[in-house]
Figure 1 (cartoon, helix red, strand yellow):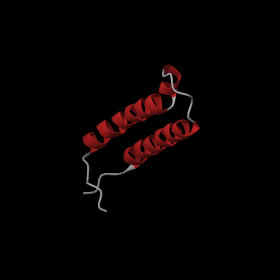
Figure 2 (spheres, one colour):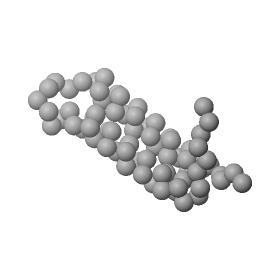
Figure 3 (cartoon, helix red, strand yellow):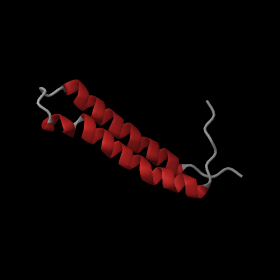
Length: 69
């Protein structure tokens, strides 16, 4: 699958916003469990951690790409 070619400013903006999405996912899936009345789910906690790591890895990959001309 072909990745869209981003301009430098677009890549910087995207790389800046992806960690925010990672923190939101971790907050919802991991830390949100402490605010609910349901019992703690290790599956949701692991999923939240995996999503957080994946989003940060994506941000690093986006930030490290060089613009093709």
